[in-house]
Amino acid sequence: SQQGEEDPQALSIQEGENATMNCSYKTSINNLQWYRQNSGRGLVHLILIRSNEREKHSGRLRVTLDTSKKSSSLLITASRAADTASYFCATEKAAGNKLTFGGGTRVLVKP
Amino acid sequence: GAVVSQHPSWVICKSGTSVKIECRSLDFQATTMFWYRQFPKQSLMLMATSNEGSKATYEQGVEKDKFLINHASLTLSTLTVTSAHPEDSSFYICSAPPGQGRTEAFFGQGTRLTVV
Image 1 (tube, each protein chain N blue to C red):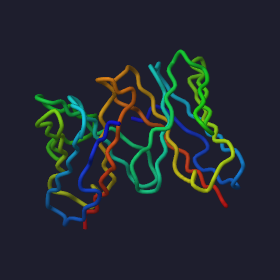
Image 2 (tube, rainbow over the protein chains, first blue to last red; image 1 turned 90 degrees about the vertical axis):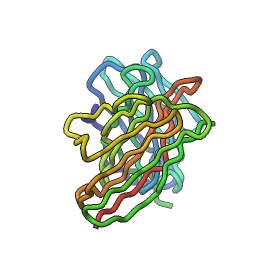
Image 3 (cartoon, helix red, strand yellow; image 1 turned 90 degrees about the horizontal axis):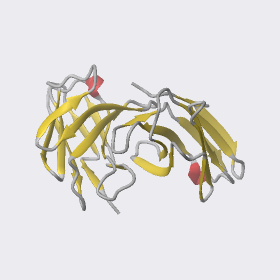
């Protein structure tokens, strides 16, 4: 079963704007990961944040993790049309275990 | 970096036939492989975990006789959809978990199955 929810389910923004999406989960975790999926394609790993970390950056991506609220956010700054995709959070209860995915956020960046 | 190769990328089959999907780890050994299914505009749901040399572990509600999983070697795991029906049409994707120096999971490219 899905670990949690993502919101919004869909997001439409103009190129250059920031995109923020949130993920909530239900149980304790070892880490939380964010993935991107272009339509009908495989998953691309974006970033991993461990349970003892609160914030992580990678290029235009910023991820936060609040274990007390069991939530995470992904911020994409200065969005580009190429960022159009579905974004999924996934939690791992223990290292090397299965991933449990959130419902995903479909992001449309209009040029 | 580590690569997981999944084949075929898409397949169309007739109802009642069986389809085999292969997932290979190209430059590392995967003792475990996760198989996920994704319906259109939905999230990935774990179907089963394949383990090299032992029986696969299936998630609740997944029919083990319909979705046959074989992990014949340290580099190959296969999922066979038997007696396929249109409702089995979906995107199937495999994943090797972190391990042996890998800090993240690696996913295959996915297989789009359409049963007509």
